[in-house]
Length: 198
Ligand code: VGL
Ligand code: ZN
Image (cartoon, rainbow, N blue to C red; front, side):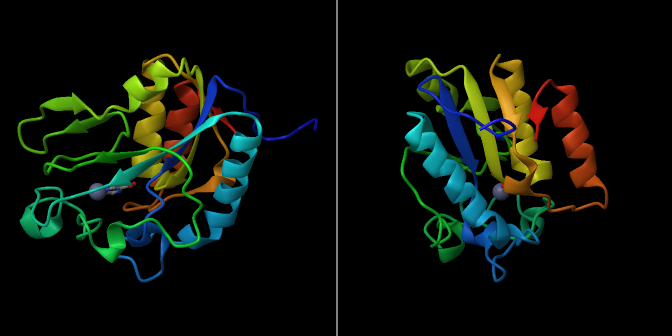
């Protein structure tokens, strides 16, 4: 269809970022306003990807109870996505049909789906997402999910620096806007990195 937003084939993957209760459910610990409104848009994208033979991969923020990522432990975020809790689970309405890459599991910050970073000493290590995509010869990514100005943005910027072609359908993301304007700034940053924003 001309003007269609995204297209998929076997070298294009859909990366669904952190569609977990704590972000996407109004009762979640770090609720992103409007998060639940994108679930059906994301599900449509998942269906399109599968129809086109594209891989669908999910990231999942997966923190221990105590981590300098959380405000209560010296960080900046309200407690969210604690391993095994309701908040860390994917939203019930989300279709989960593909591999899941967890991040933050050892107390790191896990903003990009590709790399986690120790919040104090800055040490980084890969999550396995890049290896998974390389194994399948993926060259192009469509990135959707939450939050647009945090984990979507960081995932997109790192994908660009790793050499992937990236498309972001705006209506399949929402910003958390920790500071006013973060959402708008993230669109600019992703666009400046060479990602295609729809
Ligand atoms: C996220 C803040 C803290 C996200 C994760 O998924 O965008 N935001 N941890
Ligand atoms: Zn987090």
